[in-house]
Amino acid sequence: MSQINASRALHLWAITTLAMTIVLTVGLGGVVTSTETGMAYPTWPNINAQGLFNFFYGSLAEDYGTGSALEHTHRQAGALVGMLAIGCLIVALCRRKELVRMSALVLALITTQGALGAFRVLGNTQSGAIIHAVGAQVVIVALVVLVKRSNPQWTGFAPSANSHSPEGRLRFWADFGLVLLFFNLLAAASLRHKAGAFSGHLVLALTASFVLFVASFRAMHDFHDRKRLIRAARGVNHTIGLQLGLGLATWAFLFGPLAEQLADERTRFLVQTGLASSHLVLGVVLMAAATNLSLESRRA
Image (tube, rainbow, N blue to C red; front, side):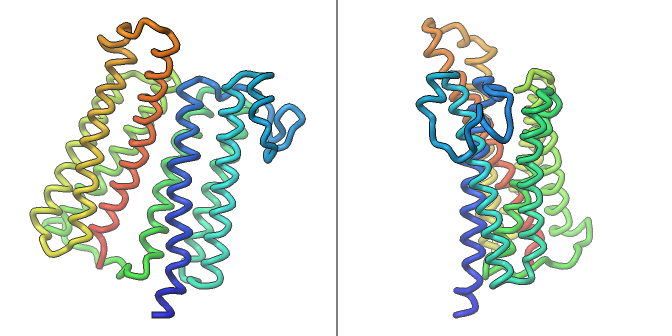
């Protein structure tokens, strides 16, 4: 029991890092993109001669607009996630040495993501913004892997299964859905930064949703006794349903028939920004859920 309690510390650190990454870093990043305030001030790492850890939101917003305060908060959230990743590595070194490499990889990916954010600001390129957005998905996948493997109840990976066996088919559909979802989020990032077509995002979204539905169906139909796998499959299904509904609402208010229904410009801006940002965050949650399903399909 003491060994399990000692091991749980890294698991809790990893969960906290994952949650903060989704809620703060990705969430605030989505708001920054939706409000087009990523270049509120083109300096890095200092902000108009002020440091990263200065909490001068009021004066910053007064001098440079609300967007600059949003961008500053996003950078601070990224720094917080970086410190949490350092904490994961320290805890792994003290208590879960077999996960030191995975913790170090997470820290390296988060550090790289921060560097990509700096290059996006200093270079002010559209491609840099898209790469920075996609990099967040890679960080999420790595964090989910760390969360799963740091769980004291994790039983390791099962041996490779025959492609025609139920296990092999489940793994194929889960992995295929995860890959399609990644490319769909790439298409979504391109669309948000005005470098992609809505049709491409739509086709990939529907295709990835269908493949993940198939994977979830196989999990629930063929593996009744694996409760964690069943929960992972249901989590994917529920998230897809919410995401498709939110995607439809986002399209309706941004490009569809409801775009001009809100006469007040400020109200329309808030609604469109809220929907687009929520759609982005839920897409990242779906990436985490799909990664969880893929890992559970390999669980021993």
